[in-house]
Image 1 (cartoon, rainbow, N blue to C red):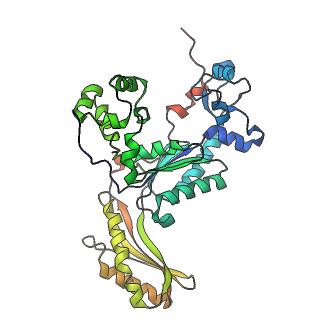
Image 2: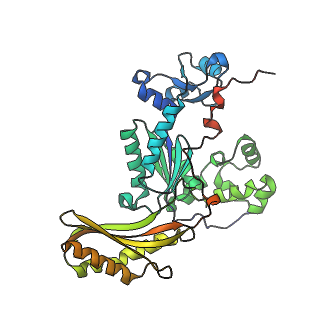
Image 3: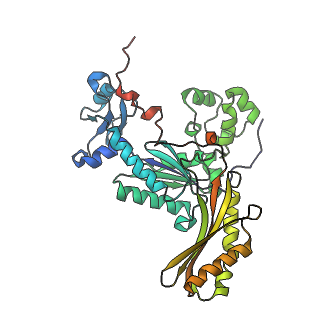
Length: 383
């Protein structure tokens, strides 16, 4: 039974997925440039029945891939250099990357040493453009870390992760809300998160090879065939993924600001700009109001001589963002400089209302199976 629901995607969010290119191998080449252009892999030793953790693209052209036995990789590529992992070096780079990500958003969800999600829906960086933020992050990674990363920009995590792989290596793929329907329709089902060989075979046996053909079936039918995962298949086939970013740190404030093409030369001109700023701030706060309460409000002002001032006051919880209070705060701030203004900003300090057990504090990037040190251990003997 076909499902005619056309509510494809939630357009409000801007999600970026950053994925380093051949991460471990890239760090080894960065630190030893003589390896550049040669097939290399990072993993366990052949004489200990080791396993490949990752390899560069030169090695991949020979068919070498992660989770492959090192001995088999060497047979495929006799010139392959297998390097013992240096986990401390990789973790140091991950810390650097996390510092870069946190410049653009408080909502950063590390997935492993080499990839992370960012929710930049509320970010005012780079003209509030997720595409420009992703470009800037990739530039910073290359400049400050010396390796490349690919990025995907989309309205949700599912699509952002697919997008980051679309133009690898060293690529950027953007899926805007109006592109989602066409992009998903042609997407092979094997690209869906969680679809492995067994599920793919079942889908192919039913003639389902793309998300477009998957949409012919109702949620009920898919749940009947695939259990609870069938419901997720139904959603992904429509570009729906409401999973939130599980941040590694709490948001402490929320603000908006604007730099004007022409300086605001008097107090009335300045006051007239407060309402549109407040509308923007309130719209952004509503997206997180279930998790954060407001403890204070503040204003920021930069004058035409590039000096700046900030002013802050506590709030009445019943009316945390009244327009008149922000206007009064702006007036007091302007009196400190009493000159033309080139930038105005307003914001609020936040208190996280989530219980501690709902907030995941990460020491560093968690290590999923593919990145754990299991591949350093010998393979079990053959039966």
